[in-house]
Image (cartoon, rainbow, N blue to C red):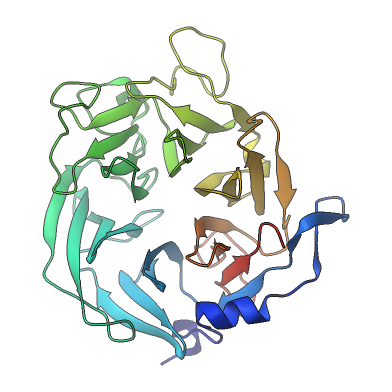
Length: 351
């Protein structure tokens, strides 16, 4: 196995806890951020990783271009399976993962479509495999760019999926099309009876390219969205809400649309995956190369962590031990890879 295909340091969660570093983190100005610690490298030498999902304590990773699902073990990474029929080009390929019970849900780009499939997980940790796939939802709009691709189960047990505008800007305002939307479906791929638009998967619309969704303990849904040239956004998602794209970008004060609770210049953000943990929303930023923290009790405030220290950050996800795992994305064709990229980093919000 080539160095590009192996993880050089992968530790069980108990060992990771024991080895967590205590060096103070530095913010953009170089001053220490109290209450946080320098990340620990959990795995490295990953190849365009895109998503992490936990099956119990076991982490599964998607690789965008190779279409492989990897399992992290105490000895490194091993291949769980390859998703057949993936067409990787530009930003598309094997994207989001979600797990419910013993089923792995996969969002990927195939020939002429994006689709969501469900795979039964076979075997035990260390020997996991993929059973035969079942299509949950096919025929989603696709393009080499702006495919969205994040999937997650909400507190209501429904499966949510983000779909970008696939470079057809006007489609985000068209309720008869699924691009530029956040979708909501049952685990079997049916339209729930209580969706905001009768017979439609559409949960919210007017999105350009959302790639982050998460919920707080009260069930409030949040989404991070790539803007074009002016503003990236953090939104509170309401059923049936219209978030304005392409009519507006960022806060417009237009009664027809829901304004973001925060917005940032793309050079400082380009937000992808998000998580809610430790009383805050955590946002992984690609072009901005930083982890942003937004406190739930003040959605207008934010703190920046790890600024330009690890390159592009694709994902932040809560781990079973209460830490946050970050996924770098410097091998995706837009970054400047270090010799050990890409990596999974373990970050302690409270040190």
